Length: 184
Image 1: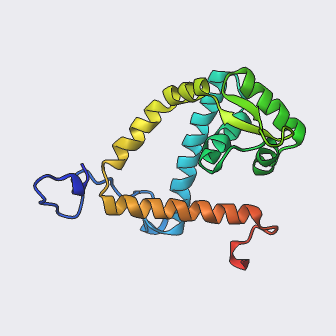
Image 2: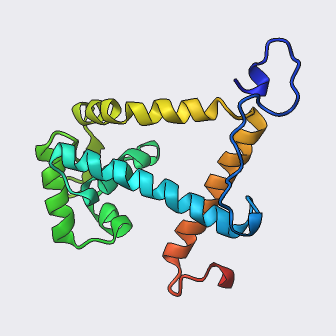
């Protein structure tokens, strides 16, 4: 239960089931750069294994799952095109075409032509594919929600700010020729 969910209002400022600090933090600093690096690598590894398992269960390649994520995450900004997907995933045109063919055959995406310019192809997450992914990732969603419940609203806001800032920095690194964020 989060602090804000306490009906009595008698919060101590610390959730009753607060997670322990990482015990293997180098130098004993659980908020140091090294501790963050270790924890982020571990989490990334777990997400990668889950994505690979999903890909395998669907007869897809891990790159296909990356494409699905790009298509899903781009929906709020409008549909993605094969060219944009090629750029974001840093693949050749042929590799993108093969990826999209696999995803379409498996029922995960659908391609539509732009009504104003029929040369433009838009990529959409297909309802069947969305349901398959939802079902597969439901345990991960439950686990995420279980962990979220261990933190106060203020702590969750700090986590969201950190993750958003990390995503911005990683995107900036990807777009810098030398990869050095300090030279912006």
